Image (cartoon, rainbow, N blue to C red; front, side, top):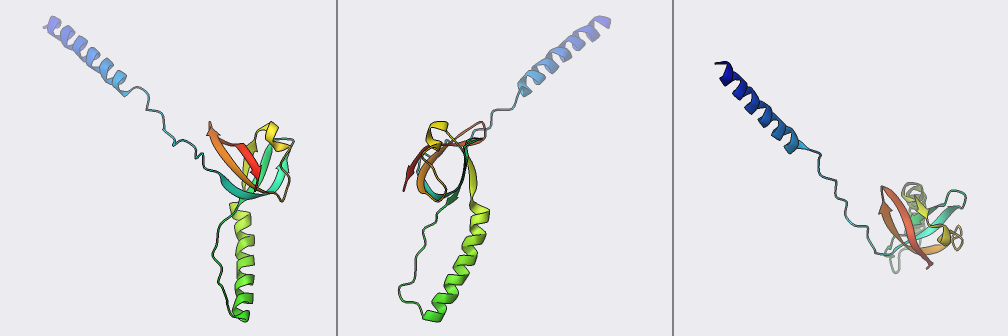
Length: 129
């Protein structure tokens, strides 16, 4: 009887060990590769001390060919208000390589590409638009 209990206890310990090994560590979270596509935007702030820039992305928009004058004025005012709100919300701070920051100034229209490493987005290529 005692021998049976010892054999069963050993079998249980072996089974528990294999279960804990099977759980292991969770698989790494796979992130999609960064887009090599060039983005466009307007540089708003350049901080050379900590190597960051704030870029507001630009958006393509279709314009009406011959709108009514009053409607055009109202639409322009509405667009200006929306643009101001969008600038505050959409501008993003990016790290930038030290060798690229010297050619960047506030107000520049630029094309840039970004890569992400360890959760930090860094501008790897930037050129005037």
